[in-house]
Image (cartoon, rainbow, N blue to C red; front, side, top):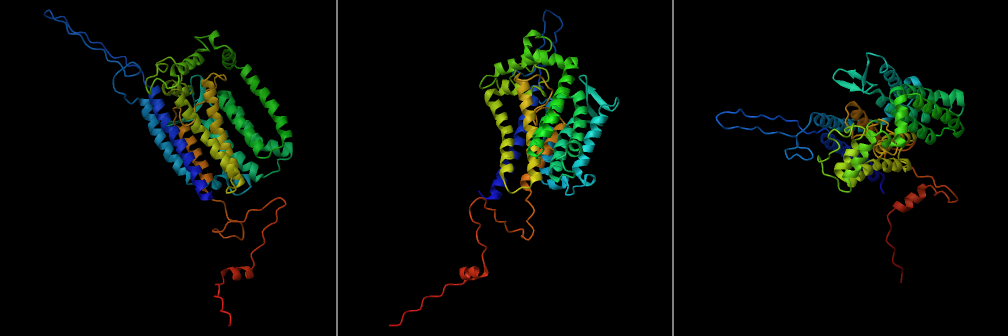
Length: 447
């Protein structure tokens, strides 16, 4: 396949999958945010022997028969989804190499400064008066009419930072204390700050970090020295926090506390049971009517499965699998540099892993984590940041590699043939003259 055609197909698949997820998100957030209207009953006055009775107005969800009206949350999701598409297209036109930086000097690398901004934001959100507390967790910073979640900055700041460090290697990472630990120190700081209020996102960042370190060439012995203490610290954090420990124990038997910690999981399972193969129909779900908590964010996949059935759930799953396909084809392609490949791998791993965790929580395969479904769950700035990150991945596919020194931009370098095969002989000027010289007609033989 021609490289330009392959590149076009990959970027189109990535853009199509992202936009399709955004559209599904708008529909499902709109559907999940609908509720039965309470209405009002007006009774007539008793006059001269006649009584006029009023009517009861109810919403058009599930058993209702009225029109499907746009909700406030559904309208906001549509606006943010449209802005997310614009952000995706704009970031896809940028050169990802500018974000990573060409210099191996940390002070001149935008990737390092992006990581620094993420660390500062994660610190500020913990300060009372700056961080906004919602549902007992301080995870947002209010900036006028919008709210920014620093953990989103931390996720993508980590991906960009590791892609730069593992490729540029400003210091040798072969040495443990003076190399490897210096590289992972900012990531460890981010994990500690995020885990205090959002353990699920911290676990997500840790999984993506481990995957990028393995692919980026970190020593296995170094990873074996770091991973066990990190697991012990994570386990201690869960065991030392009462509500996190209750989530863990209730996961083992949700029906032991059906009205407490097991309520979310039981209602989510009922959504899957109600949907079946074909679903109840868009907008016709019942669990969202006050039964299923966090139906527009953490458990929106349960709403998808109830209303669209197994077919809708498989469609969403296949759209996320497209990210894996694109990343795999990009890693196998020789048309991209190492930094672009690692950035593609880290970005796709972050999105797909988050989707896997969210789906696993909705299907009660793992304890509840509080992670949203990327590009589908209700959100504002988080949706814009994720869409911009997807656009950056498209930029990796779209950006052509720099030509080799001594080679014009219109020429392609000859691939090296490895193994026992002999390298092709260079074309000499004599050969060129022979191939290009016009053939003279043969002279007739003398009688």
